[in-house]
Length: 307
Figure 1 (spheres, rainbow, N blue to C red):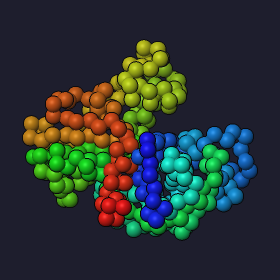
Figure 2: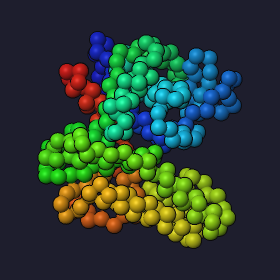
Figure 3: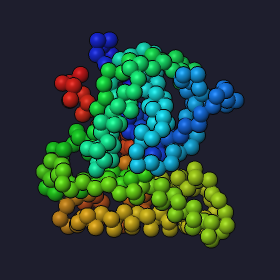
Figure 4: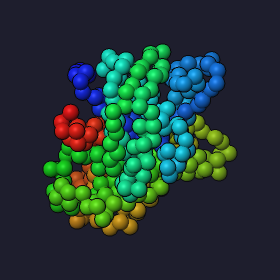
């Protein structure tokens, strides 16, 4: 990766604030924050800010309808900025943030989320042992999912359904002849975490065991894992049920594979790929989970006149 930066222009950093993972244009890490008043023993992914210590990515954050209810997403934003500035070889920068919210939440929460991200004009912090100074010069908030295909709208001929499957929510949008249909946008709390919970429950009911989430995630992502066949089949069964539930919800929103094409983005795309019954000629699955963050950057560049 090669980056260039004009000191007179802000660095645009796209951030996909997921409930399972934070995604930037070039990195992914778990949405987890553990705060300490004293320096912890293990310092991997440690962020130091305003006298407190934060370990980033230890656990997934619980689902919350409003991401501004605590400071966790702000701390995670700083960590993401640190990663992107490190990749650019910068320790100090003027930063313009480009973020997003679920489709049907944007209009109501956009201004509050922007204010949340810009709560401080400047921030000084240390992440992974490297010091950073950031001056915040602005922020844009865009609809999730749609941003992942912002550079591909010309390909959306005829009637298309876009489905963005995240950890916490599933967002659905119709795109007809390259134009999003504002009246046909939907958000449901049916993200991949629901599949994780179902798999845990099935394993507990059948075998009375708790399986590490990392193992379940491996099955969901790749369809396989190095575990006993009965356990593997149980997780696969839960994943198949979840994938069928996704397709059922799409049909409830008038999805018809004979009349439209389906474009799937987000981390849940692997579940459709591995466990759903679909026609590959009518369904496109974008497995790049950083696509939305890159889309935010593209839209921000356009809004700033090509900065």
